[in-house]
Amino acid sequence: MDNGIDILQTGSKSASRVVYDGVFVYGMYQKQPFRKGLVLQGLGPDDVVLMPHVQGNLRLSDCARATILGNCTYEGSMTIDGTATERDGFTGFMTRLATLVTHGVYIRDNHSVVMSDFYIEQANSGYVFEGKAGLPPGRVTVQGAKLHFFPPKDDPDAGTALGIRNYGGWIFFGPNQFYVTPPDVRVRQSGDNPVHLAIWGNCFYRTSLCPSVTPAATLHLLGNHGVDVGANDQVLSHENRAEDNVPEENWDRFVPA
View 1 (cartoon, helix red, strand yellow):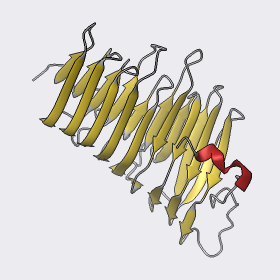
View 2: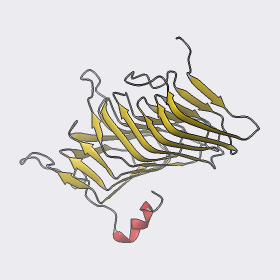
View 3: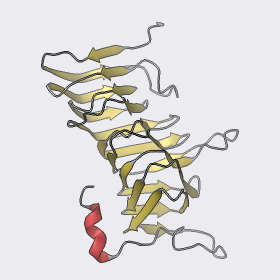
View 4: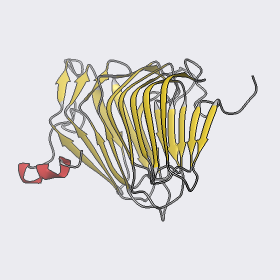
């Protein structure tokens, strides 16, 4: 089939409540995150979407006023975007799995999301966070069991755990596990939007933190733990080891997570 979307739900002036259970759309093992899938578009404050069981690409555009909850979703990639500035709804995902993807999720336009159990394995890279000037700052919370990559050798940018491109707001990452490959946990941030990145409660299993950020980014490290990190003769900085840099009197910064 050559259709561009498997399922499209759009907003209207009327209230709606839609449940997607046992729904299978395009995306599993395809590495084509912006093709087909389940698309939610322009949902408003009176729209509620529940996803007890959905497989495949999920694409949410200008739905930040709606209430959207994914109970169990897996495979394919997820994209959240849209430039509408009213964002008084909730978007959250409880359990989600993504394997053999370019990236597990693309958060664009400073959007917000809560993901409480997100497992990524055998991916090219992890997460993309993008923003634009003039949009409200966002807040992202990501927790999970493991983050693991098989980056293609011909792609020098692959294997990036967190790619932050002018995203503005807060990103809370953890608890989670950065697992084995690649050994350098790459965090790449660019742009002028102020962004706070909190990496907390993570296990670095045979990996070490390797951030590259601009002055617009503030890195908060708390409660991380390394297992078999670095060779015996390798010198790692406190930042590479993701050691605490947040004093106890400022731990309340993590309350929003």
